[in-house]
Length: 441
Image (cartoon, rainbow, N blue to C red; front, top):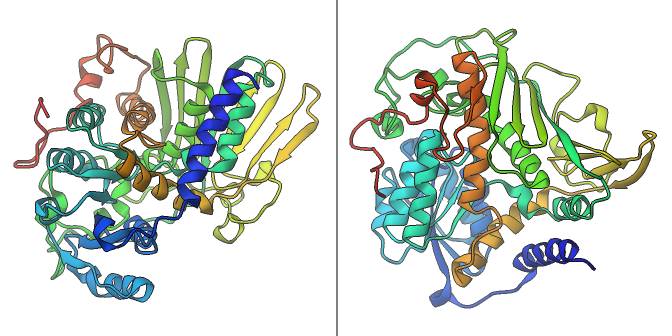
């Protein structure tokens, strides 16, 4: 076994150990957590925490208090306990017994909440993308290091067994030199219904939901989930789902910052008032590598693996999978699926010589388990915030190029752009008081 094989297997062993160890240590040794944001992804995390004997799920925090009854009832069915419900997540940070907070909010809240949690001495599980802007995810890294906090980003593929096996294969050198990689992020998104600006429903603390984002009237199209398509709160599907595949590609190729980026596209089908494009390409240029992302949000024939198929040990059917990474080596070609579709190797003649099925569902459990283990060991997690920062940067770079309409050169020292004031103005958002992040965290 060479050094690269050893490192790959060691990483895989660490991830698997996190999910298979038994730790029924009693109430006094439980990790106490709160979940911020319980509309969608937050409940997946809450369920993971609730099913563990060594975790106490103490809090739910969400500015939409209408969600509390059904969410509490669901958790109570799992473990017989009722989390305390609060609108303001700062109540969680004020509890000295809380060890960690999971943040599953809209993107514009990820960085402010993470920095505040680190300052309060809490460890953090923050959903992808790590941040809403380039500047603020670097501040998240600085806060994690300064306060010696564990900060795990929700890119669960870094805890997936089949992805570690693929990484080991890539590191073996069998593919040869990789000079081109392609990311596919395609699915079918539904158009937005027409809604007029109005007043937030009773039970919604809209001012708190806005947080650092600009003040504007409430509109249902900018609220639950639909916020992804507006620049004030998210980065479109490139940041929403594409960041998973982007992280995979960057991980497999061992890259950090590109030298240049160019993105183009537009709203060709979903012309319903959203701002982020429904069709987009991004090209990142690294030394010796060109990485390309292609995205369509209106393709019924090329989309993500159906939910019911994700946990089956099946050989991938590549032409019909909408979320994947392709690695073009000088010797071989690899297709790597994001949603548990495994990976496949083709030789120089285009013949499939190796097909490995994969299961994505266990990665969710393993990712949370890795986070809990790292809270105890104080080691860095499988998707440490700095890795999440670099992968999120790629998506931000792509969106800023799209919004400015030109190719941009990357300044590897500042992580901003070379000689482009308009692009650099988008590196950091303008924060609505009092939710700003200080220069010195």
